[in-house]
Length: 104
Image (tube, rainbow, N blue to C red):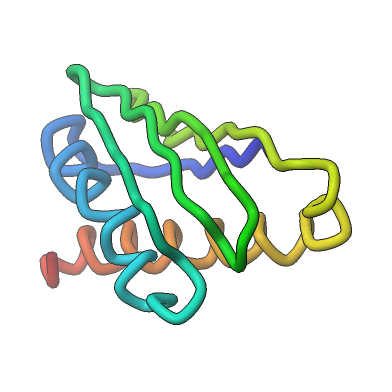
């Protein structure tokens, strides 16, 4: 999984909003996401969770002009790769839009 989303927010603002991304994704999909672990170190977060029984691991990096989300999916989840990526991308884009509008 490799997702890159451009933004035009200040580094501090996008970092603060990004720190809520994985938690809010879990909240929105609480019926499918469990065992969430997220560890931040400056502008990078290592995360892991179970999605519908699949173990997902990844990294979220907040850069000056984009957010990068990379991760590994188990072979059995590859059939759902596009759906997983689209869900994460849509959620991240929504979060950035809300940050830009001052809603977060």
